[in-house]
Image (cartoon, rainbow, N blue to C red; front, top):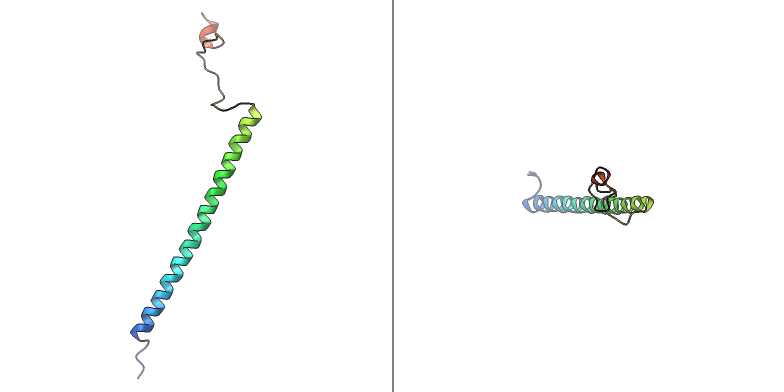
Length: 78
């Protein structure tokens, strides 16, 4: 009479399957983290090159309409 796999065989195969799932999830998480780091670097490089092209040292790159030097909107009409 064959009753199928024993309890210890079932536990061993279930443990092996769980270990394989954990390993696969770890690999997938590592790939996602590497991809995210690459994107972060690419975005940082794009921002730096964009500010370099415009000749700015940072900031929003726009001038205020209300500059104290009189070059803004209020300076034209005062």
